Picture (cartoon, one colour):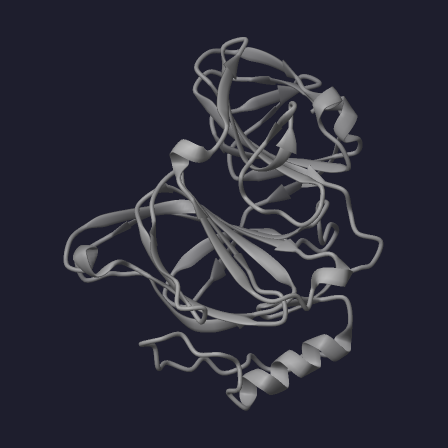
Length: 293
């Protein structure tokens, strides 16, 4: 980007028995548009005795977006959903006033070698919808808008951009785009973006103002309308952003809210185990140690 404001390096974080690269939130940039949290999972090469097992845990005030590059995750939630997430498809779970879900290696893969690689994202809900009824949507890869332009391949994973709209049911103006190049290519797409904008380099490199940026970095733009850069050959980037909310978001553990009271209420409901249950799952994850707001 010709207006890089901030560079965020991927940082290791533990999500139970699995290490991920944490990208957002960051101390100098808590959110980008409505995007409040991004983890890069893998690529993890798991042996036949190693599996992803994220036990049932609660969320409020957000939608989760899971997008895999490789591998498979079995999603189960307190709405009774049970669906396998495969590469290129989108899992969009809206927590609203409260939902519980687990994420595990599917049964048929648990005794074989496997790879897991993808992004897990939290999108904050607007204040007037943060206590909405929970819901779940699964969108197959074939239903995600994709096109080519000037030698670049695009996918609109969520939101609206370039006169197109993803079927993922978002609740505020946003975009989440995949762009792939096979050869070095100049990109100028600022006129099609809005609000705050950031770019994540998955593989390859981009060049902006004669500076080369490598994978595992998020570049935060000062102005989304000036998104211009050069993609190297065989490069994949993800552009995400949208209109920021007027209120700040508080994040505690898996809870996102506009007020401390909503966070405290969710903590109490979880400790008393009155959140809805995931059918067939009995594990309980205790709250992390308290923090001072």
